Image (cartoon, rainbow over all chains, first blue to last red):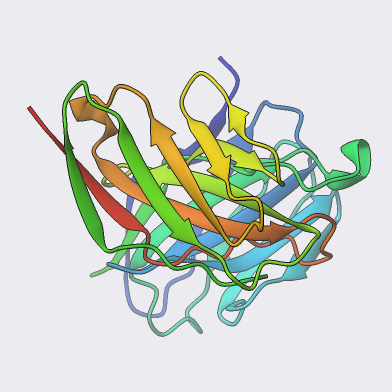
Amino acid sequence: DGGITQSPKYLFRKEGQNVTLSCEQNLNHDAMYWYRQDPGQGLRLIYYSQIVNDFQKGDIAEGYSVSREKKESFPLTVTSAQKNPTAFYLCASSIDRWRTGENQPQHFGDGTRLSIL
Amino acid sequence: DAKTTQPTSMDCAEGRAANLPCNHSTISGNEYVYWYRQIHSQGPQYIIHGLKNNETNEMASLIITEDRKSSTLILPHATLRDTAVYYCIVRSYTGANSKLTFGKGITLSVRP
């Protein structure tokens, strides 16, 4: 089945450690996104990528890094510089608007819940 | 992107229609109305979107007022599995910033 796969579902980070969250999609979507959700809050955009080898900062990029070496994959690294990393991380993808002339719906994975040990 | 206003919560009986309202009085001409829902501990699920005409798909109907300042998401026959937080979002047609701005949404509780 086509979809977006995030792994792991739960992740624990020690102080000073970098951790990487995986996001893979087989929908042939051009654009991919990372959001963070805190309890009782809406989603905030961390990074997004509209094409391979290119990505843009979102509203809260500090302490995070990404790469986009393949169309299907958009891993997010939570670095030790992110002082409050405990959150629910959501990856999304969409067909890029240049194909259809309008913004397309973003489709989400089931998230990774990151906690600090 | 324009802001939206939704009630905090509502409930409906299983099998009945659930009508979820959303106000977006500052919406501009190139902004679409999107609806997503999020079931606890899962990622948001896309439901439907529209510009000015009413839209229907296999999940729901979207009714947008003529002045586009408000809309209603209709789940025609609510089931217990429709219990979730529903987000109404307005988003630019061709905005360079591709983010979705999620507010707190409306919590729909479907009762047996």
